[in-house]
Image 1 (tube, rainbow, N blue to C red):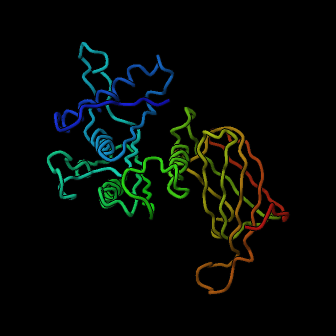
Image 2: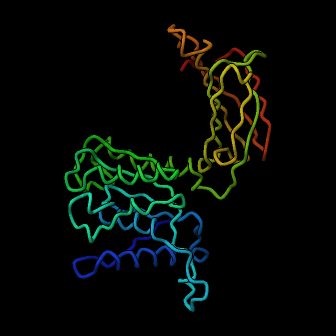
Length: 296
């Protein structure tokens, strides 16, 4: 579900007034979540250019609401659960234009700032990609989950980039990120441990990837090395959800240590596939045999 915010803009209104509209919008959707059939704890805010600044501002200037307010909307938390600023103005002073209008959202980032998926283009001459770099760097320094895409081609204001087959990938990348961050499901992730073997022996370097049958549920993956004896652990915060999964094991190399020999190791690279039912806190044994699905 999506809602469109029509907020007050300049020159009649200052960005502080726009911010009030943005904060109110998050509260309003959250207050009506049950009526509209949306999850109140999975609300994101996406904005382009100046709208991207509003999204970043709301994400760094939210509050918990007023519990004693007579207005039920004002009792709601105004924090978005994730942000999607697209070629956004983040800091007007650094940009060198409208410093008073575009107050520095990057300087207000904390460890509690919502995760963000950030999009920009290298060729943008209206809002430099530096603006997105500022916001990403602030999120990185604060330890906040973030993903940044700066596409090589494209001027300012291209939106979804429907006419550019490279740029128009960003909405699909966003969908993958939302899935990876578990914003597309109500189901709780779980920790998983296990052991993978090939013909009864532990592998050298390999990836173990859990791909859920539920296309909205997040994937989970881990890398193993020879010294782990085939054992792996995936913590709950990045783990799979319970249910049926396709499991891919990408066997990369048998060279130990793999980085020091200087020899060609890709002859070892093979992909295996199996199935697993993940239960909460499960131990998953993955005994594989030498009948690979396909070479990498």
